Structure formats: C-alpha cells, structure tokens
Image (cartoon, rainbow, N blue to C red; front, top):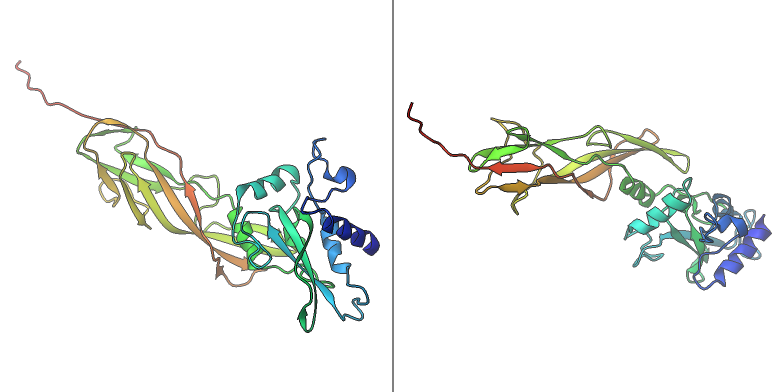
Length: 291
C-alpha cells in the first residue's frame, strides 16, 4: 500500500499541475475527466513518511494541506476564495465525496520546522480527508465547517403582500412581510451532517434582510420581518402604475456545534436572493353618477 501510494505521489509530482488519473477510476461517463485521488488514497497519505523516518521513529514527516481549486487560493490561504465550479464539479462527478475540488500539497518537516517548500502532488474531491501530517488523521477545522456552511440549503425568502392578490393602488401603502418556505433551512433550524467522523450541527441566523420594491427603491438592511396591515413596519407607496416584481435578499450568518458541544459563531455569511412576487400597481378614478 505504502509503495503504491509513494509511486502515485511521484507520478503526480511529475504531472506539472494536471489532475492525476488512475485508470477507470478517473473516467466519468466515458468522458475521461480526471477526478483525482479517491477516498482511500487520500486516507492513505498519512501512512507515507520521508525516507529514513516512520511512525515508530518520526525524525521527519510530511505535512499536507488541501487547497480549494479556485483562483487566489494557496497553501498559506487554502480556502479564502470559494467558486461554484469547484463544488459543482465534485457534486456532479463524485456524488459521494465531500468536496470541493481541491489541490493537495505536501512538504517535509521536522521538529525544527519545514525543510522543503509546498509541493503540489494531486487533486481530490475528498478534501476534508486530507491528513494533517504523516501518522495523523485529518483534523476537523473551521475551514471544513465553513465549507459545509456554504453548502447548506438555505431557505429562500419569500414575501406576502397586502393588499392581497398581487394588486395595489397608486399612493396607497403596500405592506411587505418576509415568509420562510418549507424548503431549506431557515434561521434557528438545524442542519446536521457528519464530517470526518464528527457530528456537525449548523444553525443559520438572520443577519439582515433587504426589501427590493421593484421600482428601483429598497428598504434595509434590517432585521425586521415586516408584517401585515396595520402594524407592519415595511411599506411602500408607489407613485405610478406598472407591473413590478419585488423580492427580498437575506444575509445568513451561522452557528456551529460539534459533537454536541457549545454553539460558536461561524466566521462567514451567505447572501440568498428570494423569488420575485408579481405586483400590479393600478390607479382608480372617482366618478359621480346622477340617478
């Protein structure tokens, strides 16, 4: 096993940055797309040691880092930028993976510190399994939690309007209310998953909402959910007629609990745009009739 993996590393290092391919393992629907290291191969990296060193005599060891394959990321800043293609690639081509598509780097180190620069050795869709170093399993990091947070299926904010039926009159207030749909995770609902053997619970929080009235004006940022007539505090009086499509955007924050521990704040946010709600603004005329 160790010899095979060592050979894989040599081949990958000579590949000049191209994702390594391992026979049928890298074929996607016959298209030949390279998916990189499998879960078993990533897990096996911890069993590889520099020459003359091993787990019983750890003189030197390899350190590893998974770098999300988005422009600007590096071993010094492995997940500072997120791009949809890296997540989409793994979701579409390796559906049982943890993703996102990442480059694996390693360097040789000892008690005195690193002795070689970071070397790109391959690609993988099993990013959260990349070991910390030789002899050690992967560590659950905030970067992994942040990535899972970005993959959460957040509820899209919808709106209720009054007057109802999508019709309103010029110069009369329209009341807006943010309503959470059944689909997705809304604030305070808990999304539970497992990352490298740890139970990770993510609880979305509402950071702010912004109401877009469809005529170029908006209200917010605010934490108000609005409400119906007569007490709702998010309203708009339209000055002209027209067919409009108001909508709401929300910024989600989040909290995380690992293995049943205390809730802590996730250092990141996600902005979600809700669907448009058709609104027809009409005018009315008063007429006097003589019986």
